[in-house]
Length: 489
Image 1 (cartoon, rainbow, N blue to C red):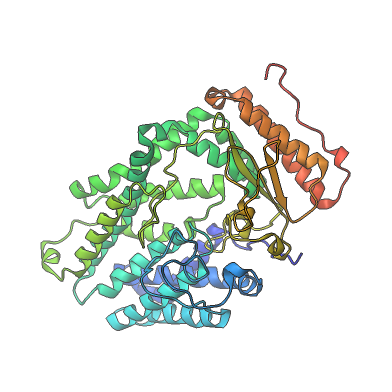
Image 2: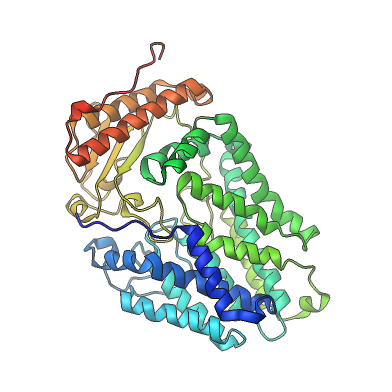
């Protein structure tokens, strides 16, 4: 299989490079105009990420031959092809967007960066940048959560396009309101769908456990993820704190508009990257830092300005409130709801689906997702085209195998397990998967709080990953030993 090299930067280096670009562009007028600095930050992040890793990934995407990414104009509703991400996110989804080749993406990025770098004072230039960003970002989305990365950038540029002369303070205030409404909607969806019990840590614990299957990451990241996943009490504290910050910060902004509430979300995104490999850091953290830096009490004169930007913020808030419970319903355009709103448990739910891959890419390279994370969009004949090995294993009452959803309906095997892969699954790997599934199905919700049981589950997971590596390398399957069994289990 043709491989794709690992992301050469990572979010920390990307942010350093973006900061260097900002310093070169703005030089002596860095803090003179907050809106100009915000525009330059957005443009710098997009340029650095595209040049550093995005262009290479997108070129593979366009030449992969996968039907999901075929280069054809698609209708906005419904659409699950490149140009609109999965069927979950449509951004400005009422406007059809064509699938753009690599050279076209280069041109679009130029139309975004040049106006924002050279003439951000011109409203016409900002409108051009916002329109180009619409087409650019929607072409990058390859997964249903992909739109969540681009949403913030598009909100910022949309409000900048609406800004007229003398409305800089109002633009920053409305941008803060829109950003906080995204988090408020995420908290509201959790509380509306699952209630306060969502904060007991079950969802976070299960997401962390499954991410260690999918996200290669650095060894220290894997150790950190497992350390948190085994400690249900720690997951409970982290879940409660996250919902509290998402829910209360937007409300407190109404009373204390000069406080930098946006900074409270920075450690959340850093933790998500460290523990799950999901990089919201590159696109979101610069905007959050700058909005918090320039948080001010709104001047009275700004409230009597054009109603376009306040109306935009109000519409986003209404969308967040209306989309709090979207089980079985398509998301509204341009919103982050729902966000992991279903309460989950590692044990006692009857089954699940585990995805394994030897992809060298970091977990979810923003926003160029490894196809291994995209559920239900490939057929068996397309699997060999993936640039890495992929295996999906479902058991019990879990969803049907991810990659079989486009195939003719068929019954699950009698033993309740299905394995779908683009490499030869050895008997050892299959046995280790079944051992782990049997352990999960045998447990109850109380096992998640028992560190001994969690250690045993993580031992099963390590054995599965060892067997996966051995199968990919063609090694002797007998060299991989099963984890020690718990006599009382």
